[in-house]
Amino acid sequence: MASHILRHYLLGAMLLVSFSAFSEDKLEIPKLGEGEGYLLLGLYVHDIIPSKIMLKGDGFLSTESMTDLIPGDQYDLIAVKAGEYTFDRVYNNALLNDKIYWDLEAIDFTVKVEPGTISYGGHLISEVQASRQAIFRLRNRGSQALEYLEYCCSSLLENYKLKYTGKVTDPYLTKLQEKK
Image 1 (tube, rainbow, N blue to C red):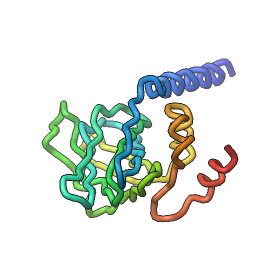
Image 2: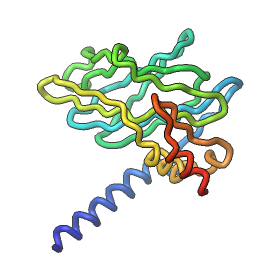
Image 3: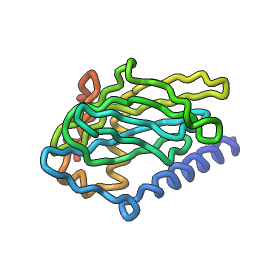
């Protein structure tokens, strides 16, 4: 029984530490230009940590990347031109061989960015194992993404709505934001 309670305290402490790394004081919120929207990238890393994840946009020179990856949940908020962005490549861990990558373009993990909103297309789940077997999935974790934004940058939510732009609509996320 005591170990069960201790586990809950440790889990709570770990969540606090991970969220404190993204406090509003430390997160630099980019300004939007004309025709731009915010893209909230969500990533969950299992097992081996990739060195970099690339996104490709539909415009000229519209490539973005996530670097400085850590195990578990993480987010990146960037200002980009409205359009479609596809998770393109996941590069292997730098200590193993960061020249090797997995091509995700054929899987069609597309995120749509709408101007004047915070667009979220789902969490990319990355499971790269030592055997070099890799599994990638895109999952809607909109309520967790909203919780992250409320913690790190609540002032941003005063002016912009979080919109899930995955393949199906998310009425739950809309309802959550209406209650606030």
